[in-house]
Figure 1 (cartoon, rainbow, N blue to C red):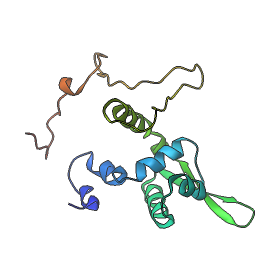
Figure 2 (figure 1 turned 30 degrees about the vertical axis):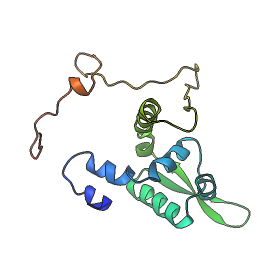
Figure 3 (figure 1 turned 60 degrees about the horizontal axis):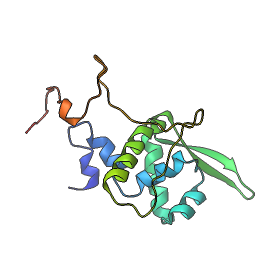
Length: 152
């Protein structure tokens, strides 16, 4: 199955997987969350080809994750890329992937620590029940039946 065909599958993770699931998109988003905005900076820091970077940035703009913002440099008007509200809502996803990778996959570098600007504490992710407030893990949750849901 081709990556583009994943978006046509009928489950709620299909479209996000199709948008975010290639090897460059999450790395581009990490750079955007770290303050990178200019095409040249993305290209230089990642070593990605200009055409591939242009395609990935365009896809994120088309999806509404990034927006283009024109700016003038010494020579011409260029585009800067900024996270939209939709893009900013991906922050917990990236933090969850980072935490999972730090826990289970051997990295060639020390883990990046994130700190709260106001107090210096480290943010944590938790899934909690909206009714009772208890923490919920994979063993504590089940998919509610909906039309088209296929279960094992």
